[in-house]
Amino acid sequence: MTDVLRIGIIGAGGIAREAHLVNYQKCGKRVEVVAVADVVEETAKECAEWFSIPHVFTDYEQMLEKVELDAVSVCTPNKFHAPAAIAALEAGCHVLCEKPPAMTAEEAERMAQTAESAGKILTYGFHYRHAPEVEVLKRFVDAGELGEVYAGRVHALRRRGIPGWGVFTNKELQGGGPLIDIGVHMLDTALYLMGYPEPDLVLGSTYQKLGNRKGVGVLGEWDWENFSVEDMARGMIRFKNGATLILETAFAANLDQLEEMNVTLMGVEGGADVFPLGIYQEKHDTLVNLTPAHLPQKGYHEREIERFVDSCLTGSQPLSTPRQGVVLQQLINALYQSAETGEPVKLESVKADSR
Image 1 (cartoon, rainbow, N blue to C red):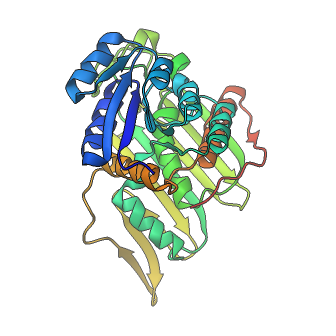
Image 2 (tube, rainbow, N blue to C red):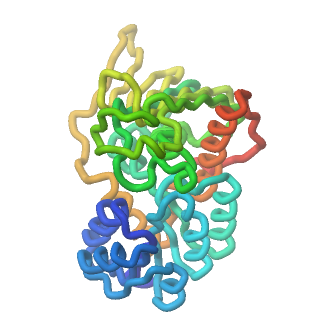
């Protein structure tokens, strides 16, 4: 194993700078970011100047060919996740790919197969898994404190939170709106806490009611005239073990709160909300609520990058696995398919490795 991880960055936009690069810097001498690639040369050069990156490219394939790299962060729009990740894996690099895994379940499957055949790490940027609330609740779930978890609820909702930057409202480049952007975070968190059960049936609906007209935006002014994604998605997932999960996600909806990101679990022996963390049980003929007195304060992205580096240097498996990525992408695509056809989608047998 190498002592210093040589990192390349594919896509030099906001997520690369604000989540990946600043946290690679915190890893100290264990990491050296040596190359960055972005199709916009000015963006790549500016990023390289800010973070003192010696090699700059407009073509990531040239970067992979000309620079010796151990690992790569893929921070492109969703459309380019699969080709960039596959190219990096085939070049012998470990890969941290931003969420969602890809545009389709078939792409996610090819990514997983490539990682397996290359013998390299492939993991995804589900940084909420690294939240202290999630880590604590996972220990409680695994210890049986909630018993059989048979129902859950996922909320990733914004009142007027359509991004006014990037390509988040471009269906061709992103594959969808809030479901594939913010909803995927809470969906993955719920599945992770539940042990990634095998899905059975999916029913979904999507709406475009507010995003395609001019309005107030708390995340900047968006291009409402070219808004091509849903502004709300709702759905239900039934798993083969009988459990069900209700999902609601929106960039824009007439709600009280400006934003809510949360997962609720209900089990035979107890239930829980994740943000803020609360565990609800019945003990000694009394209904009790349990809340932590203290939680670590390290940032979610910082912990994610730190663990990715640890995995690359030691060969240990990251929290998010390629097979889980396939199941998650299958669910996202099935929700969109159901919304388009108006019919529930029966899923073929696809199992994820639970953790």
